Length: 91
Image (spheres, rainbow, N blue to C red):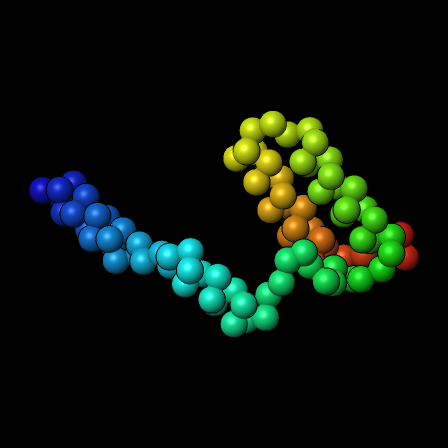
């Protein structure tokens, strides 16, 4: 009985959580928030840091054939480009 209640609860929760935006809605929100691509600034925005990540993005595009794996690598590189501390001028 508990197992059935748990399954029903999970499905109800999932149905409640799934409310994805359409692509048009997503793009409107993207621009409304002032986001742009390609990024105008990396954090920190130094020549060395930009060179490192431009090279990293090129490596991802050229060496990872699987689209899903390439997306995962791109997401990790983006997170690093925006949040990872840079302790020297060259990264």
